[in-house]
Image 1: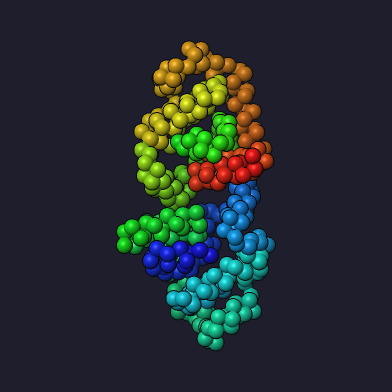
Image 2 (image 1 turned 120 degrees about the horizontal axis):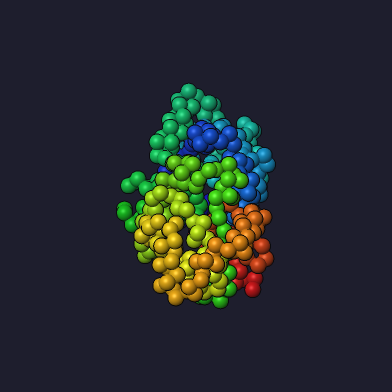
Length: 178
Length: 178
């Protein structure tokens, strides 16, 4: 919820790249989020997130169940680009983590697209073979970049930063090397 | 390497509590550090640490092998208290992560104690049943506090913060509620 503003402040260009964590977690031997695999760490991570949101003045509601099924949302994000993609992602994250809503239904996704004024065919295009393949390619690329979690930020010169708590450092890095 | 200075700046009292990560990792099903269990994440964590140390103006050298055997050092830290304990911990961390040295030998530990001017009987006391039991109790207490990694910081009102990147937040939290 901060990347667009913080990137503008530093004059850094951001390209959003939707991908799926499921296959990446599976490569680590996890069948669900590590928040669930490791309960002590998971409890801490939720509390940490709650404190961070409070510090940022952002609403927080823990989604239940977690993780949510994000395949449809990831395909729709892949079908969009530029500002429409980031706007869609902001809306999905605000719903899931700000209001604790489910994000997996066509109804939910359609509602966001309608509010955004996105083209009517977006949802259909999200189910096309091209978009499905593009998302699969993004997952493969994420793995090749050694990405193991989200959010992850990669810079043009190949540095990887992971987590909201590294967002400012990632943007500063990109700015310093621009 | 920053806690004493940052705590002083905020007028927050710090009590160092040595414990062992081995038994805590074992509870998660890990037989070594998660840096080793999950290679992609491990590579990232080392690079992250390198960048952080550079930003802090601290030397960094990756210890090999990692993790080091820390039982002796943890017992000696337990045998000390107050400023002597924190001074000893700083010296061990500087050797392991600043110069990539091994920390497991009596020779290494004795050298630090000598430089500190610690009482000659400290090393013998570190091997006493009382100190061994005190360290075991600390590990049990760490588990009861839901600690799953190090460094971890607990506040008087029971908040848990994990990692150098939460040190300032932990101290700010303690300060605000003092």
